[in-house]
Amino acid sequence: MAGVPQVYVVRRASRTNGAACERLLKEGPRASSDVDLLAMILGTAAASRRVADAAGRLLDDGGLPVLAHATAESLRGVSAIGAPQAGRLLAAIELGRRVFCRCGPGERPVRGPEDVNDRFRTYTTARKEHFLALHLNTRHVIVREELVSVGSLSASIVHPREVFRTAILESSASLILVHNHPSGDPTPSDDDIQITLRLAEVGDLVGIPVVDHVVLGDGAYYSFRESKLLR
Image 1: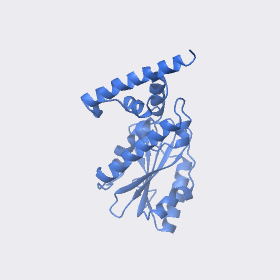
Image 2: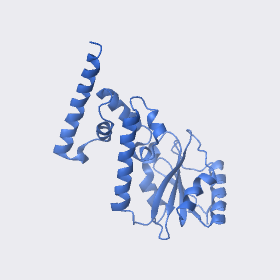
Image 3: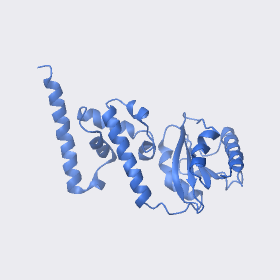
Image 4: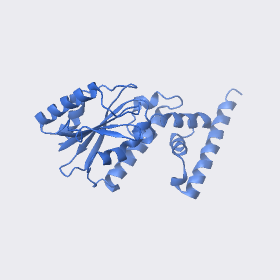
């Protein structure tokens, strides 16, 4: 009889996910919430409530844009997510990334910091600083988005080698730096200014210029280029 509760839990989760799948097939995937979609990917290895809770926690710190840069280690740190669930989720994220790169609006060039703010504004809900490097081609089209580091409530640790390693390997034409301020105030700190100027110097040395650094805040942004802190 010791195994009965486990069988019951699996069947209960299966019924719950089955209903979500039926609703998705009937109404279309766009009618499903982010949490429901995640729960269906995570599957029935845990009780349905635990799966839903895990899906909610994955979206709690920045939503889908932050989840898009998840690692196996970060996923395994969430309760109710084991290796199979982490693998399925990483596979789904990578598949979505490939579809977007091959079929999405990737040929639209970045015209200014407003475009950056519009594209990455969801990071303003993150409770930690996220520092990204946007790799551009010669037409200022973003060809790669790289999450360089995730910091604390008030700072992120960024080293030039982490920013330019991929840029050199990918032969990027230029970079735009982006990070969020969880406080909501996009005004750059002294550390923000120092690291930006340092990265700009390294960019000039390796021939991959930093054309802007956009700090995201609550309903506002700060552009180093517009403020004349970058050429």
